[in-house]
Length: 293
Image (cartoon, rainbow, N blue to C red; front, top):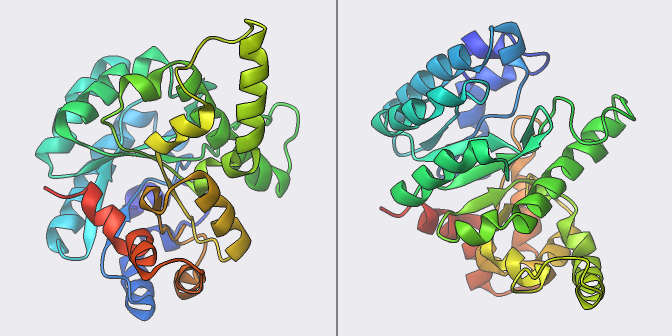
């Protein structure tokens, strides 16, 4: 993150803008290339809105990517509080040479099924831009009832991602934009834990005519998306994710700099009792395929 923005955030002011720390961590863990994503900070609250954040962030990320093309891929952000400026910023993101869009799971209680994101997804479908979805950290779902320094980041952040995925499924957004590669952080929230409940409850409600026909079971719709591992070291969590998502849908992710032990999260995948082909897919090939020219 550019220092001009990092210094306006509530935490990680230094680590977020320390590119030497990033490259050191990559080298020590044997990471060849990284995608730089916006961590859904609160900088826009200190900078008069998203427009000024986007102007600085997109230009500076494009600059560091140009300086390190073999090591970095950049994703741009959009001015969500200025919908009339979104289309112009998307064009600028492409012109800057950035290769993806980085979004939060929600903005001011609006999830990504909201109509304001239609031009974003249409752009991404046309330009083959993947969409990375990070949990919202400002007023995530449940924050109005529980505001706790531990429970909010541990529980509410991941439930915001979960609800975002659910809303995009129920609204038909995932079906409408099947060609867009949606990549949800943190395994899509708690989705792997509630996959069976999604299917059984959906079937029960369909029989009673209470829920609309989605055209497929939720678990089948989940096969359209990608998820990342966000630095997880638990073999059990990785195995559970593999029960829901194919290996070709899972991307190793570091959640750096919040999590610093990149090697341990890589080893967790290498130690899984799955084929070497699937390990390579999760650690490298899936992401390479997504960004294939």
